[in-house]
Length: 443
Image (cartoon, rainbow, N blue to C red; front, side):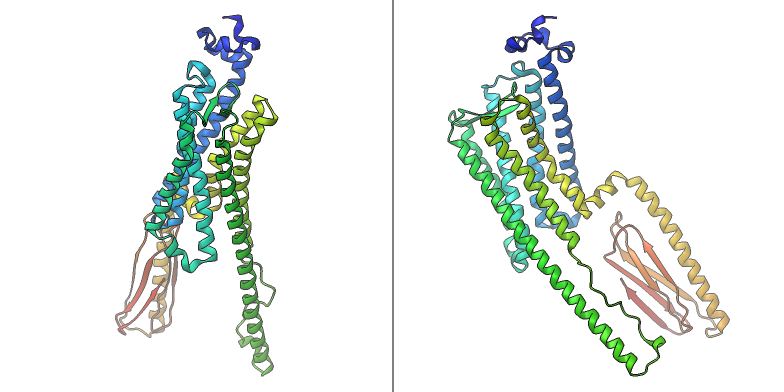
């Protein structure tokens, strides 16, 4: 093997030497070892970003409720942007870092075009973050105006307008005055030329979006706290009135044992504290990673020339691609439920079958016991009870049923069916042929 492969002083020589593009050179030459470390770490980050965003799309696509909610359309759009950026990084940035000029030259048009598409979806994703903040702001602060402002047609128009703005902002990078190029030897994307006016456009778009996010989420958190305090005050008032009513009944000489035992009077716990914390954590992680990503890219090249500092800075871009789906998977219960069923379908189906068998056996036992009790009391001569349960439910969600079988002998039985979800419409009917009585309960 050529001895120059590990010589830092002639770094550009080994990049063009085919003998250096071997596994042995990759493991022994100092510069190649650095590339191997960078590419390996980035491969893990990008794989996680790609898989997590795809899971977000699958989870939303599987749920009719989430598909029909316009707020999730912005999440879908942002996930698409992250997926495209991850794919561009995998097919272009990683090979360019591993093979340098053997794969693509820094000033090649292929490098310019690929970075243009990366910038297009980066700016579109940034604008989607701002639009999501506005969507949540309107839904909480002005809920009566939400359906009008974010109707289906209007939401689609807003999303496509975000893509159009992203295209306009990234378009100057195709011209010589404003190129953004991937420097594979320093692990960084740079302006070409360095003093281009385009950096002020980039700074304006990112900073204004971040400011919009901060203002929107700050108002949302304040609104949620005020709502929580109002709810706590209302609950305290209700409990106080119940306690006063119980005391008045007791003072009038009623038997204490006949009193209805209401809820204990105590200061209520905050009902929205968890919501506040989750909302704050979501905003904190998304905003902090976004702020660190674009701000370090703006000022770090002016204060450091270490490629490992640039490596950390570029890694933030790949972390930014995965932070949004990670936050949604951690804090969105409905998404987690859909993905849990998708990934653990066979186990969930098996557990549901066992649960249904056990519950129906118990329900049949309760029905038979009630019939025997009626026969012993002699209140029914030839009565026969039939129970009919009808309902509609999603096959992968199931339902809850609470039924009460009532007869003239006041014999009751109940069944609690839990098929891993909630029912849209469930009816439990009881018919007593001897007395022509029936009772219907719906859940």
